[in-house]
Amino acid sequence: MQGTNGATWRVRVVWEPRWRALARRFGGWRRNRKNGPDLGGLDLPSGNHSGGGGGGWGDLGDDIAIGIAIIVGMIVFGVLFWWFLLPLLLLVLDVVVVVVLLIAGIVGRVLFRRPWIVEATGDGGAPVAAEVVGWRAALRSRDEIADRLRLGYSPQDAVTAVQLPGAQRL
Picture 1 (cartoon, one colour):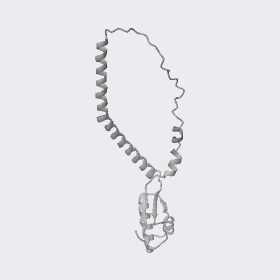
Picture 2 (spheres, one colour):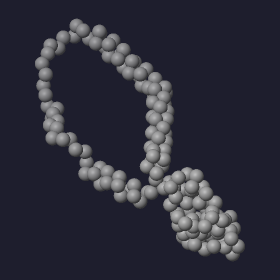
Picture 3 (spheres, one colour):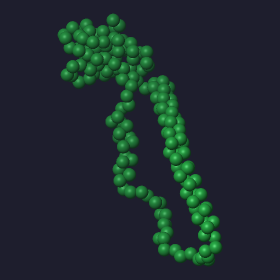
């Protein structure tokens, strides 16, 4: 959109998380990860154990057949898991993540009345933003800011006029 003074403006309703606030709130896990795994006082065995038992050659043929059957079974399971089960599990996990994020976004925006950010960005200037509660009100505010910029208002005046409760409608 172009104003009367020739400046080009982009006015939009933003639905993006506040990355700085999220990084401060949830960024601490990186510091904790660098310290190494916490075994919680688990005492691991050293591996120097000797066992007893008879050592006859009588069951060697059966043991080899069972070992080969186990190896073939593991290979078949690995191939089935790699080419069928893993992609299916990842697909289901992706769908679950998208649904959970969609529900969380709807709850955050609608039930908690989190404001939408209406942002006007000029050619070289810093963006000017207004917080508006409600999706329809945000769309109306976007249109009003765009109309005011088109009429030649400064971006700060256009946003301020929309944010004021008793502001005149165009």
